[in-house]
Length: 128
Figure 1 (cartoon, rainbow, N blue to C red):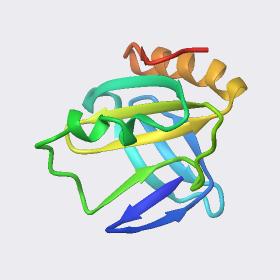
Figure 2: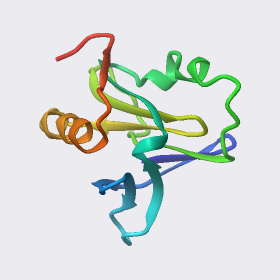
Figure 3: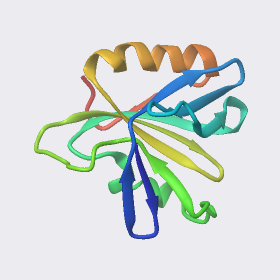
């Protein structure tokens, strides 16, 4: 996970917990809840298979006018490579998160998200 505060970014290893009414992003180091997204507040969820996550290519435009809190999170590695990765984006009216998934995680994560949240994940760009 990358937490961005101003121009600085910090990385953290996280896991996602699907609760009854919310999705939680939790620190693997100490188990603290970093972010909670209530399913009822989620406006959209997207999956992409690309070199960079959607926040670099237009997610910011999609939430223009939304007042983001001073701390927002992006769960992904600091270094981008030439290789395509699996990205999952969840957006509420006031916040968003981008998660980097492995191929095997993607196959489990997206169906679990759709089942728990009742929200269909939209595939954008290329898919694999």
